[in-house]
Image (cartoon, rainbow, N blue to C red; front, side, top):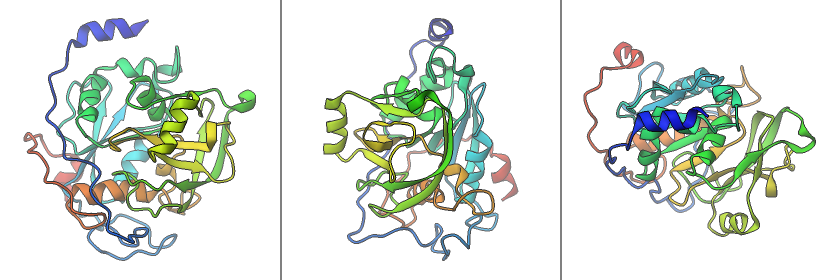
Length: 305
């Protein structure tokens, strides 16, 4: 419906410069991150809060808001907790503002008309994000963001109606996969996380050949530890693309960054992982230098730092 009109107005996006490889080597024996970026110690479940007590890293993470987005504010809060500057991106933007990574948050973009994420996939901001992601920009799609990434064919498979056709909201245990990505490198393989889910169309589905390929190449980012309440194939909670920089996750790590407001602080590692890589900090190997960014005006957080 509206997709064709949006496509005709957007035209062909300009080629995007390549980003550095997202899969920097992980030191042998590296375990879960027990420090904030910069080496400040933290106690999981207790010492949770902004990483630098108000001082932000140079990392800028874009958070896209679509009409109907629900969790963009929560995602921005998680970015601040990880010590980075959240950069608001609107669905009609044709520019990513030189960010170092992008989050597509949960919600009901464009009212979930046609299919979840089907219209958002054709929004102007996605015309810039798709080539950037293919060039290596780290992208995290959470819940509805995961659906958008699948509709955009940046990730394989699809998210379908839940088992028993019911909306599910619950705190679930996840098991982290063994292959690190920019968003999961702060976790140990097999680490257990307690994170909320809330979805009506969150059952991951793909043909058997695709599922086998995801398993063989280590691209299952997380699984439901106690079985998928929503009926996801092989208990898959999240997957990544071949390069590892694009991750889709149906549970909500942004709702598990502080035990005061969520079931745990286990989700904070998704955001700390990408911040640590982007700021040249030693959380997981030596990252490549950033390409130069255009001189955009500072965000409110940057101006106050």
